[in-house]
Length: 161
Length: 204
Image (tube, rainbow over all chains, first blue to last red; front, side, top):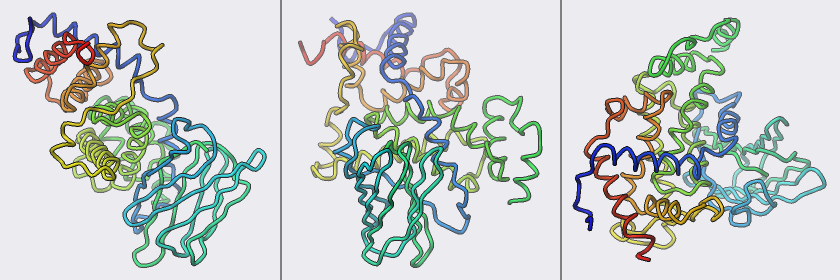
C-alpha cells in the first residue's frame, strides 16, 4: 500500500508517469487550433503610439456565448480597470450589428477589427452608447480609445463573432 | 521608427534567422523594439505553447486560458521596450502569464466571496473533457488525478513535458533543469500523481 509520504520512485517509474502525463496533455489539452494566428492578429495593431497607455481588457462574461466561441450572438461584457464595455451582437443577414455601452460614459473612439475584413470605427455618444452596423463576422477585436485625461487605448483579446 | 521599419523591411534575412533558443528570442525582442514587423509573430508562434500550459496549469479553463494567452502577448507588445534583458524574455512571459492567470482566477471567484484560505482548497472546476476523448477508464482516472494535483505540480509537470522536447530546451534552461533529469520536486509531484491515481477517481 502506497502513501502520499512515499517519495521514493525509481527513475524508470518517474519516466513512466511523466510519459503518461505527456500523452494525456497532448491528446486532451492541445493548444487550441488557430490560437497562434488569433494572437498574431490581436497584436497586429497599426497605430499603437508609445505615448498611449495600452491596456489589455478581459472578457468578463460571455454566458450567452459560453461554450460556443464561434457561436450565437448575444451580450458580452469586457472590462479593464474602471472601464466596463457591454456589447450586444445582432445578426443582420451575413453581417451583424453591434450595440455597445461604455461605463463610465464618455465620447471615446471605438474600433472593431475583424480579421481579413479591416475595421469599423465610430465614437460613443455622451451617454457612452455606440452602434456599428454591417460589421463582418469573424475573429473580432474591440479597441476603445479614451481621450479624457491621460490618453489610453483599451484592447480586448479576440472573440469569434 | 517608420524609417527603421522600412530599413528592416527591405532586408532579406531577419536578424533572428539561423539563431536558436535564447539567442533567437533575444534577437526577436531587439528587432521588435526597432520596429521590425514579424519579430513578435515569431515569438508568438514559438512560445504560445509555453504560455498556454502555464495558464492551464494555473487552473484556468480552456476559454480563459486563451484570453490570458492573448493578453500576455498584448502585454509584450506594450512592454517590449521595457524588458530589461531581452535574453530573459521567456522568464518574463512565464511571470506575466502566472500573474494574468491569477488575476483572472481571482476575478472569477470574487462574486462567491470565498476567503483566501478556502480558495486555496477549492478543487479545480475544470470540466472534464468529452467522455469519448477519454477512451479508457484508466485515462479518465489519470486525468482526474492530474487535475487534483496542486497547481504548482500541474504547472511543473506540464513544463517538464514541454522541456523534454527538442524545440523547448529553452524551457529547461528557465527551469534550470539539466536535460533529461527529473528533480526532487518533480519526483514528489509524480509520486503525488501516482497516489491520487491509486486512490481512484473520488474514492471509487
